[in-house]
Image 1 (tube, rainbow over the protein chains, first blue to last red):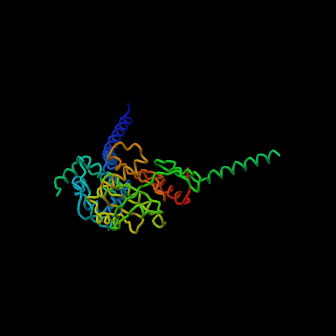
Image 2: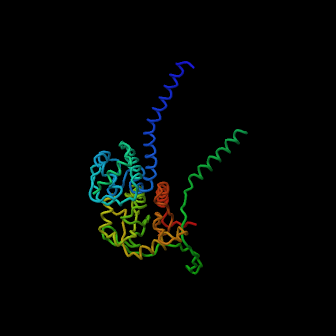
Image 3: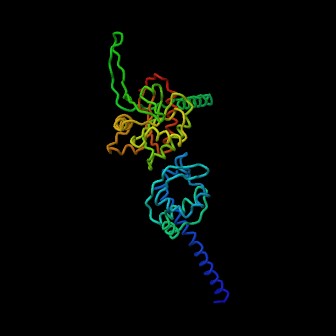
Length: 139
Length: 219
């Protein structure tokens, strides 16, 4: 076996590892996103709509990236405990109550990853740890 | 000679194709019917009596009373909901908005949404709901009334007559049907209000009803 061959084998394996590591993160995102899509259909879609469009002035749309970014750390609390009181979304005020949704931290992470990366939003993956950290600070 | 024959045949085919496509779809009439024989000018005449929506009286979001007489001469669509409903009502009304937008400027058309939670959904609550939904004017009414009256008319007159499998009591309300009533107060269709495709069908059926002559004898 020539040195050249061994060297190229090493290089190949190294590339494989690198690719595997990279897609691990990507895979995590995809896993979160696709589970989140299912949770969204079951728990959120009735009110917020297939395309996150909401309903007139009754139910806010989920496409206000600025709002999502600004309230990023509170989002898990809103899902878990519901949300009451006026909020401003896309320049409109919404003051009806959202019911609390009984989901586990990982499910909250999945559904928020889905919402945060659908309807024109581009947030990062929201993982379980981040959700747990947020939940500990819910008001 | 042969060409003429073929051409003639083709023409007949084309003509019949045109004819069948211009045949308007008529909507079925649901509910019980009974023949009634009466004597008119000394002759025996048999007429069919169709099941119709009986008299009712409710109050709309403006506090005005709405009865079966208020809807005389109107084609209308009925549904049942409540303002705090977290399940299918938002989908139903997202879809109903499409019906509203399509027909809000045509006369003799109404949408009536009955609350099934009249204890919570007062006239003021319904008005606020309508405002937030973006509804104004008198095309879409949100009706409030006695709970028994609402449940009775839902079960006996609007839904069971169409959907015979309503053995699950109470469950029918969450079925989310949109029921289409004609000017003679007969049920002409029932559509799943949560399914955009069926709601599109409802919209085209309303157009068919609008084109129907007022005293047409069908079936």
